[in-house]
Image (cartoon, rainbow, N blue to C red):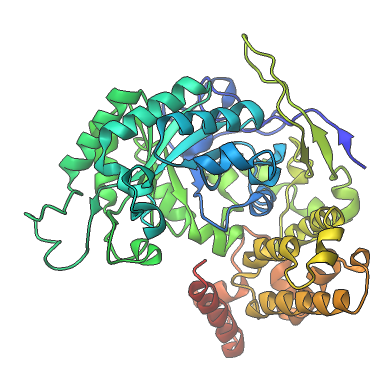
Length: 513
């Protein structure tokens, strides 16, 4: 049944922004404080963000991440301005989310100041997003190479500073939450020996170029938070995937921007593969935050200790609950999970607008015992959510038994939980084959109500064998067996285990995740 429950307090968004300290835990971040920390909101949520990734960071994946970290800042996939304006009524899933996903930024794509302002207003006034971001860094040919100049957006916008400034200015006027910009260090129209020459007119990715870009955009719009992918964007000759790997990383230039513009905030994005790397970037105290993308999608468990390391949840508050979580009955421990209808009243001295109805599932209260500790915890808890989602989609499953759209989206969201686990590659293969059997059952006339996502996930875990199951029960903030083996901390003939983990890694890399 759907119940009514007030919105749970979200972690802090930074000084003076909406959010609340979690009352029952102590906070003492090991990172130097910044001017965005403090006040009633605690540590700024932007210290660590999960990057917007197309076909990856949907609501299912964001909710799964919330079972690992209560504090990390989440982002939507990029949504085009026109999709928001024209489709949000007929496709509520385009922007819908649960209260447990906050703090949450919606990223918009587009190049029309008027339409971006309208889209931003819809996202904030009707859906209650905490922040709106303009994408000025996507290098995909689908967005930067459109024949109509006025329809090009993404990284191509860096060639028109005045337009970027006007878009952001209009967006800021339309909403009463922060508006930010995500961009690259510059652009090149092609990539090769000739275009790499210092005198090339295509080489608009020098530090002078990007610093002037930031200065001008801030002056024109008032935007003061820039999320910088530490590479140039190549507008021709490289695929989207190659644009994430081929242009060299230039982290020093992002740090230099933070030094040269101390009144602005900068978050670093691009190539950050571990929390250790993120913490190293943050230790200077000059960056507002670091953004991680593909590394989190491949392996959500890497976020298991960020609430302590990045946001200052004390060691005792985090680890003291491990024994309780591991020993507790799952259904008892998370008995408050379930659909909750929310219509949160906007917290503004001049407005009492109520956001459109949305449904929250996970009861992420202030008690750290409600957090998942092992990968098995995450799967068990998320699988119950999966069945609750599919219960609303039974007609769709029976109408399109070969597509199984929602079921496949849920399976995709949990795929990374098996990363690094012995025989982990078989987990995703078994998920896919299990969905294939669902199709056969539906085509034979079986009703969708007989299908269980929880049973499917449990069967896939059992398919890992004893060693894989042992890894699944290992606390996520502890190294897995294969990692300890690589460090030389364990002995034994584990060639098969190492090979299975290596195969799982190759599969994740090949899939582009």
